[in-house]
Length: 107
Image (cartoon, rainbow, N blue to C red; front, side, top):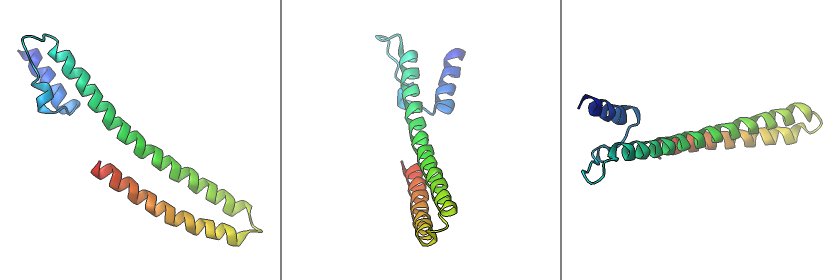
């Protein structure tokens, strides 16, 4: 009984599993604990996938910033073009950050 309580606590608070998954218990299916853990790992993987997507968007923003800064520094002769790209970057950066915040908050 104590071991079952520890497993339940671990699933609820560490893996953040839904209650109906943890309560899936049947005398016909003795491997219900293993099934619950597998389901919880799948849920954990989905949460990590969302986090990975947000991190990849951040990486895209950082790389684009580096490219624009490189273009701005190297192309002294094309100062006007670099300035236009920099202004464009500022607009894209703002929209990307807004997209990340909305995507990560309401997913």
